[in-house]
Image (spheres, chains in turn purple, cyan):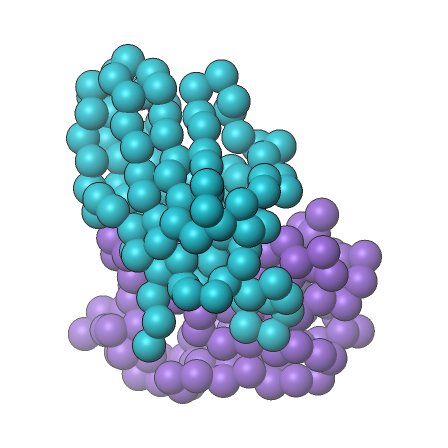
Length: 111
Length: 115
């Protein structure tokens, strides 16, 4: 199966700060890549996706680019808000449709 | 927007008791997944169904856990007897036959506490 390495947290930021969460993966093929977000006490929600190399996924001000040459899919947001406090999961999907999760990165944004 | 429904949201049970969780996937999604998420960790796949058939239950502790999807629609996950270490969030997800484009859709989960 695939292996995902995510930047360890927790990460604490002030409002309007720049956020980066690093994610690299190992894969035998070239899967689609996803970022999921989990708010306290909730399930996982799809945040953004990229389905081929050099694709940039974006949603709610977050962006991530599928970098085939570095097998990376780093998540970025230019100006975070308190409402962005959550756990973020990088998740590649393999050609046999198995979704793999990293350990998650807890982000706390202070007002 | 279509959702994956799970119930109950919270469950407290005593160890050695039986407990069951229910999931109703998005209509038309052939594939259904049950995950366990221990606090502070990523989700771990327990069982995957394609329609009514189990396609992967390699990580399901079969001595105490069972799962069924009798008509290929909704599903039930059961634990009997529950142990203290089973305390976790149990997440259900569903996807179309090929999830490469849109991934899985997750429900809100059932938070289980075993006392």
